[in-house]
Length: 348
Image 1 (cartoon, one colour):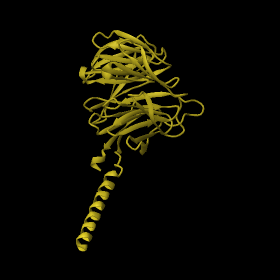
Image 2 (image 1 turned 180 degrees about the vertical axis):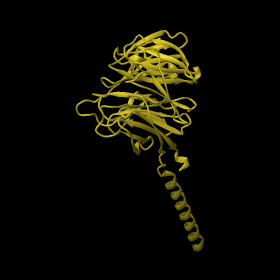
Image 3 (image 1 turned 60 degrees about the vertical axis):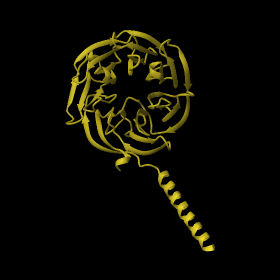
Image 4 (image 1 turned 90 degrees about the horizontal axis):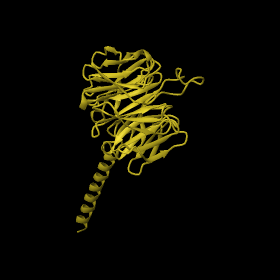
């Protein structure tokens, strides 16, 4: 009997050890995705943003201090420049592909217009007047068949009907609206205000302000939303931070500090990529930074930075291809873009 008892205790011990080991293995932190630089491609002056085409065959980059925008082929890295109307006035800020419409849009701050091109091919289609001053970021609602364009100087967002190109409604926002994102099937629009550090949520039907989050001295720049629309991630340049927003409670749930002046962010599964342009020149923020910027990778589950890569001078734009294989960033002061391969954790 005693022998049986000993055997039973031993068996239980082995089982418990095995369970503990398995739990320990599964609790191990997953390896982060690895960035491998493939190419550096020279481009026009002050590339502001980078956007992959829906099929990943090319990258579009607006040029803030140059005429027009450029298309970089991801295969052979050839560069093509396209000149919209009024291209001599420069000021091309942000771009957007809308695959459902085979369309590509680009904003021009200096004129108050956005321009639509056919994709693929980039044949010119039309111009759309936003009726706002200094249009910047463009977002899309499939359900509402609507574009939202933030107007930096007039402190407004233009809601534009896609079919007619006409203004549906103007939202009066906080100071210097920039990043925007539709939620709830287009019923709501979240607007980031660079001036004053406010995150606002509007009803797109009535134009009324629903909720707001205020962060003292904040400089909110870019927003991305989780697939289930329960969380959003926001970059704050002034506080050198990224916030996780609880979209149900509409509050800041978590905050993490990153490198100086975080700009664009992009979701990649359970990771968040961040481009930070680096500290400002002490005399003039428009000049080259004293040190290069960085690309950071945040593990959303652990809420820790798990990888950092040095970028060029003032990495500003950041984009990930739809198949998740490539990342591209634009270096504002170097006048170039860098293309990386992303190796996901499953392949390490």
